[in-house]
View 1 (cartoon, rainbow, N blue to C red):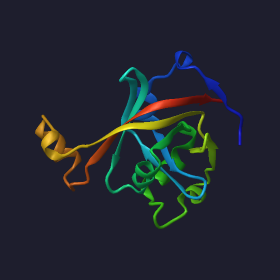
View 2 (view 1 turned 135 degrees about the vertical axis):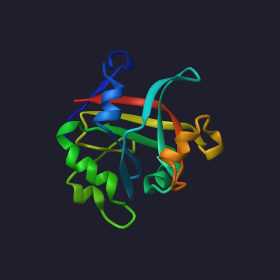
View 3 (view 1 turned 135 degrees about the horizontal axis):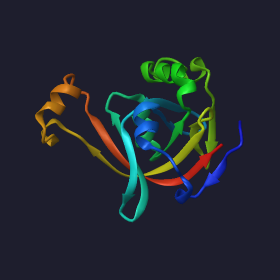
View 4 (view 1 turned 60 degrees about the vertical axis):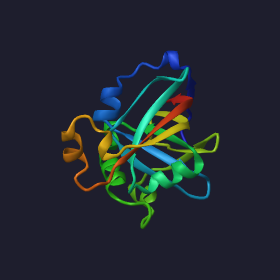
Amino acid sequence: MHSFQKLDSKDLEINPFQMIGEEWMLVTAGNKEKANTMTASWGGMGIMWGKKVVFVFIRESRYTKEFIDREQKFSLSFPGESHRREMKFLGAVSGRTEDKISEAGVHLGYMDDIPYIDEGKLIITCRCLSKTEIKEEDYLDGKIGKTFYADGDYHTMYIAEILGIYAR
């Protein structure tokens, strides 16, 4: 495990459009007995209810969702472009049927009992504050449902308080 320095949120200088939308992130949840991770490219950061938060969108079919719902905590790991192959694999293979973390060649670490992927350059630990199931009738633009949810596998939006930010 490589060492991390805890950052104050005011010292975080990132472009979330690049880090989340282009380079992607790994959403990891579980406990020391069992954890799972998945690749995500939808989400953001901001202020909600007077707290610094992240918001992530997890499809109902994703195995990682079960861990988030049970533990109510998760991490976001940002390995960057140098780990694109691993991130593609982690986004395509289910942890229900395979030990995809080992197979991808990445490693779990834990901060305050929250699992994260150790290959991340930046780690954000989070505690869930709310979850909202997004349904077809929620879309004001009808093209969204047709474009992104033709199979009916909708997202749940999680808003989570940032507990810690760690960087190498």
